[in-house]
Image (tube, rainbow, N blue to C red; front, side, top):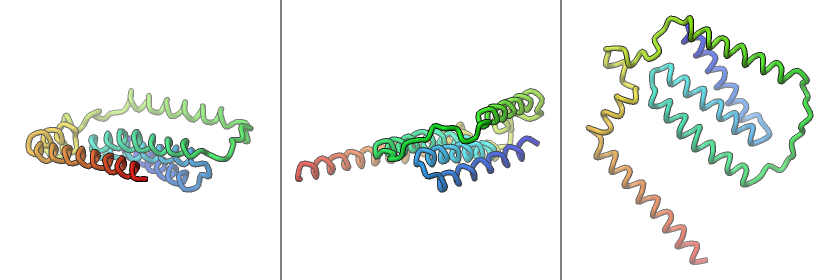
Length: 173
């Protein structure tokens, strides 16, 4: 019963974040909308038992890429100053109450919910453990270790080549 509710909430959160990315006039607000969308999609991945993809979603996209976006936004600078006057007088109290209700709902679901916390790890069906980190790591470091190391070597060579080309062109001008 909890999965459909969580799916609908995360789908609505993802759509709200996507609309914020497009509709916000301030680029920092757009980046925060992107962060909400990325976290919502990561929770949707967890619901589909793709834990590795969810972890990569949070670490790579929500962590590194969004940090890069915010760094570029701050480097370029935001030309407008913020208006700190509150337009909605009860907004903070409403958001605080809503956060409290969500925390109570999550606590009640944790205490009284009748579901397995890690269904993929407790199942004996090999298809249900296909997206876990253990299953991917076992394949990656046994059958695909040569391709993994070759990819790492090629990416290192490409990064060194890009740095060398950038340094060479900088010296020419």
